[in-house]
Length: 128
Image (cartoon, rainbow, N blue to C red):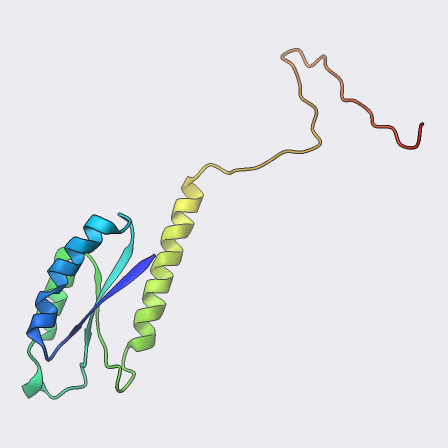
């Protein structure tokens, strides 16, 4: 239903793998799967950062997906990411359900011919 693409902001090679992961998703996942790009370890000192926030946002914009920076260590934006993807999935499902034709089963209704001449059969209980 949803995929979080997570890279380490202190490791450029993990960021560079995102394009490959997206290609794999496009080849093997549903077309409408929700995706969010997540840069983790945002709590790290700027001197250790290999991927600037602007580069992560630019990649997310290129693919038309949401972007968050998080810190699993400090819990920064972790809940927000999960709530965001859950909301997106819920909205997508609700939208697709409203487009689908309702599937209903009608019971205890007699079949009617074009003229409506056929009458419903009465059931009898206990010989009456």
